[in-house]
Amino acid sequence: MKNLDEKHASQKLLAKIFLAIGLVGIALCLLPWLLGISIQDGAPAIVIFGSMFAIIGLLSSRSLFNRARILRRMSSGFEILARWTYDSPPDQNLKDEFGEIVIGSAGLYAEGELYTFSAYSCRLESVTLVEAPRPQVLFVISIPRKHGRHQKEISIPVPEASRSSAATAVQVLNNSRRMAREA
Image (tube, rainbow, N blue to C red):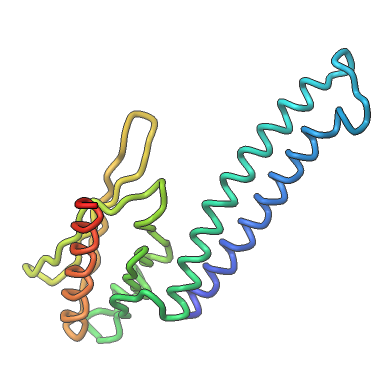
């Protein structure tokens, strides 16, 4: 829980910083009119500069606030489908690599990172439970890039004690993906 809470706090802080940048951009856009700066004195440049700040700041803060909301819900125990750590001796090397694993209906927290399924930028393409040679949940997530969407595979080893919760999480995520496609 501590890792999720720390990540939530950092995402929320970044969101507030970008919101402030967006508001500074809006203020810059209004500055020429408020101070009576003419076109010859550089009003268009100030407005263009302010517009860029406003757009980047506001869009980034929206995305970061969404990530912070997902992390807060996960750390509070809402929408969690499966959660595990690697505590047994054979899994100790996995503990260093993956840390705490939290699979939620809106995202995956693994390797100290949040992968969202519900954001406009990141999409869950598939999720499967692979049994051999060792049980693991395989997520395929797509992320927009310059020339289309880029797919990333994330393979999460499943400890023996968490196999049933992992299977349930995979089933719920696949059902929600199916219902979203049919809607």
